Structures are given as structure tokens and as C-alpha cells.
Amino acid sequence: MKRICVFCGSSPGANPAFMKAAEELGTLLAVRKIGLIYGGSGFGLMGAISRAAIQAGGEVIGVIPRAMVEKGVESHGLTDVRMVSDMHERKSLMASLADGFIALPGGYGTLEEIFEVITWAQLGYHNKPCGFLNIAGYYDHLFEFLQHGSQQGFIDAAHLEMVLWDETPSLLLDRFLLYRPPEVDKLASAAKKTAGYNHQNGIHSH
Ligand code: AMP
Image 1 (cartoon, rainbow, N blue to C red):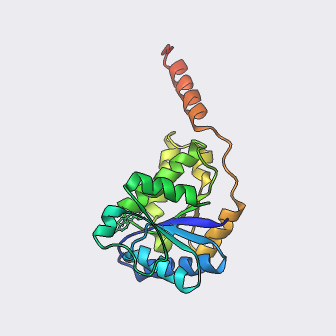
Image 2: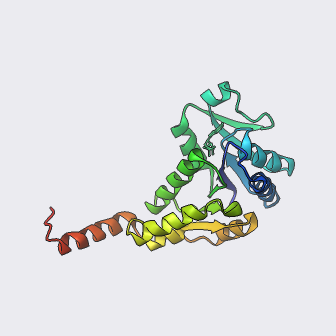
Image 3: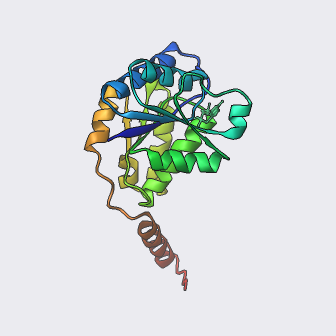
């Protein structure tokens, strides 16, 4: 595993444990010689993880849309900044540079980014591990919701298990190294469930 992309809040969050975890993960990546790919900002958890990784001698690549640089959010300590034209280009470059994806606590941006790569993983578009670092129980309700989504038939058990969770950076990284992509094909599974539903309800589809 050469590089991991970390999505995280551009704000520090209400609990000091969030910034501390970002620093811890940044340092750990550097110590384990794993490069950090992230959104390039100097704010919030994003700033904390990148500063810690740089300070520990790690490789840090910031991928940031030009418009954000013009607004002054770019971190000034970065030696490798990839400027892109928009959010779509940013996410596709981040995804291609990374061998795995971690979400630290964050808001809409973080959630959107991690769920996009999870969606690609369940479609088999990539075989890279995706996981949440659940600091101070921040993601407990989300995890419960995903279990609910699985119980209600929208998320296959294999795709629920595919998403890795842990409360400490080092244990999550250990899980990443052991990761095996799921064998369940999302599209085939959806087709089978739909055929079962149609059969039970007398629906004749083409
Ligand atoms: P949020 O969790 O809503 O704070 O959004 C954080 C995520 O969205 C990061 O992983 C970034 O990729 C992107 N993002 C949001 N705000 C910024 C910002 N000020 N600078 C750079 N990226 C940002």
C-alpha cells in the first residue's frame, strides 16, 4: 500500500479528539511510509493531518480545484500540489493516486467523497479498501443506519462488510492490509432480488 487518500472535515469539529486523531493518522502514515493524498486545504482536520504527515517526513499530495486556491484555502506547507479544474477531476485524480480510502470525521464533503469510492468498490470499479475512522463515536449513527439499509434489502451483507471500521488509526491500517474485495456482484444481486420480487408479485418484466 503506497498511498492512502484521506477525506476529512475542513473544520476542526467540536471534540478535540477529532484534530488529535487527524494528527495521529498523519504521523502514522508517514511512519509506515504510506503517502497521504488529500484535498489540499490547510483548514480543520485537513490541515492537521497534512501538517502532521509533513512533520514526520511523509509524502503528502494535495489535490485541489483552482477556484479553491484562488479563495486561499490551500495549505502553505505542501510541496506537491495538483491543481485541477473542478471537483469531478479532483475526485478522479485522488482515486487514481490512492491504494485505499479513509474517512475521518467530517461533514457533507467527507461523506460524499467516501460514499462515492464505496459505491465504485461495490460495483467492482476498483478493489481498494474503504474505511471509516470512528473517533469518539462520531460515526456510530451512520454505522447503525448502514446496518438498517442492509436489513431493509438495499445493501448486500457482503457490501456492508466490505466497508472497514475502526477506532484507532493503526488498527484500521492493519485491516486495510488484510482487505479482500467482495465477490458479490452488485448488479447481478440487484437483478436477482428484483426477479424474486417480480416472481412473488406476478410481475412479468421483459
Ligand atoms: P466537509 O467534510 O464538508 O468539511 O468537507 C471536507 C471534504 O470536502 C474534504 O475532504 C475536501 O475534499 C472537500 N472540501 C470541503 N471544504 C474544503 C476546503 N475548504 N478546502 C479544500 N477542500 C475542501
